[in-house]
Image 1 (cartoon, rainbow, N blue to C red):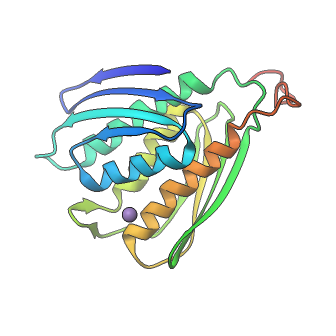
Image 2 (image 1 turned 120 degrees about the horizontal axis):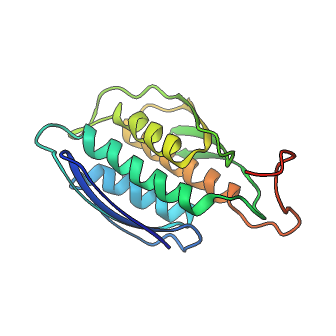
Length: 190
Ligand SMILES: [Mn+2]
């Protein structure tokens, strides 16, 4: 298990992450919808995640969403590298009712995010565009390559949830242990 505390003038976050857990989570960000998304991420990645964030929600949700992404990304980075005996590449297409989202992950030790999803508007009090901010923060701090591609959908809650779930399952597939693979790179190190 990896642990991290990060304090700035905007947020104060403490988190624990176990990459090979069973999907247990205890998340309190002060934002109900975001808690729901992070619980879903843990459940479907089989990563255990404990996270408490005390952020400046009186400004708006932006700092809290971005900083939680930074902390989870850093914990993933510490847990993932150096890469050994894992699949490295993971893909998942997840549907939620009318919505369908595909995620591809490469545990590449290089950060790249392609995010193609029509998220604008509100989900309750939550700005849907913050979903992309979260994924920028997590991917660039974890140092993984990720493509998140919207296939179809209308309901913003469903689309967002399909994004988090497809990323979670793609990551779960990418980190799956495979003893026939020693180092999944011709470069010699990842
Ligand atoms: Mn839901």
